[in-house]
Length: 84
Image (cartoon, rainbow, N blue to C red; front, side):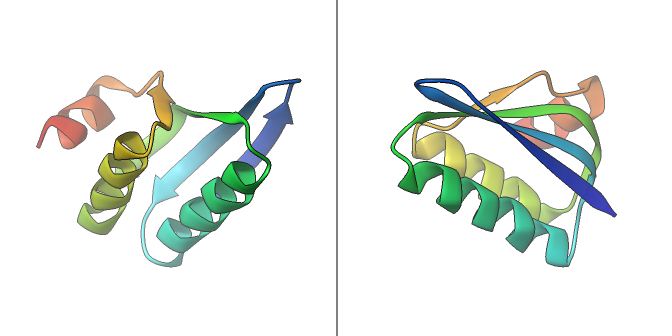
């Protein structure tokens, strides 16, 4: 299970993700980021509550970074996954 909470300010959208980014939840993260991007704000993705990311999710997170999405607060385990 995955929970995505959205917090918006004047110029930023924070997506707080909790759970595991696996299976169909990878698409849920992608869709949430696309929706936030369509509002024209800076996007921050808070990974504090993420315990595991499958390879497809890691690919997505790298792609989001390439598109100027800022990933914040990954756990040490998720940081290692991102370094690959």
